[in-house]
Amino acid sequence: MSVLQRLALPIGLTLALLAAPAARAQAPDSEAALRDQLQQATWPADIVAAADRYLQRYPQSPLAAQVRQWRTQAELGARVLAERDVRLFRSAFQPEAAAPDARDDLRRAALGDRAAAVRLAHEARRDTPRYLGWLQYAAQLGDERASYELALHYRRAAQPVLAAVYEARAVELGFVPPRDLDHVRK
Image (cartoon, rainbow, N blue to C red; front, top):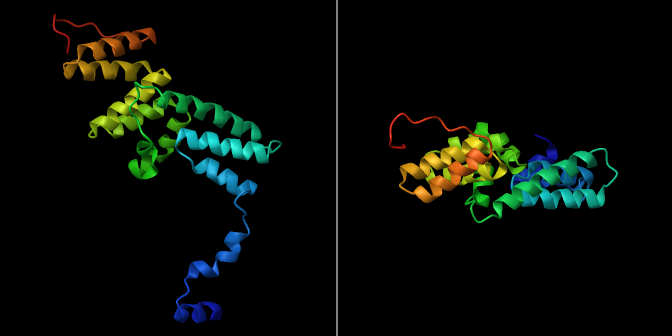
């Protein structure tokens, strides 16, 4: 422990104050700070906003092309989340809401990765509303298996209209439902 640290502790100052000059070196609108905000964001609208700030400030950056791509992908995710048929909320995109091994999938899903959304749905299987929300999100992103999984869920829940909607969507996306061997669909 340095002499400065030993002097600061009895006065009640925290070690965080000792590190403050280093933290101040990175201004909030510096390229590194904006890049960190962009890379840490997991909510699609936050990614779009962070990308806009970054591109406004650093349009010629070597990272600008990648930032534009992230923005486009996140914009798709934000549009899907705004649809009435998708019941997935900001809280589902919080890193604390996901298992530690699924945090990378949160970012991918925010960028419109439908396979990541399906994996997150399966992680949330015990939380039915969140499970359905992730499947709805994946289905609206174009995942045919998520659409069919929703159809099966709604069929089991005795909601034939919703089951038919999602089954039709799955078929429209290219899914070939398995043949039933009996007259009762399960």
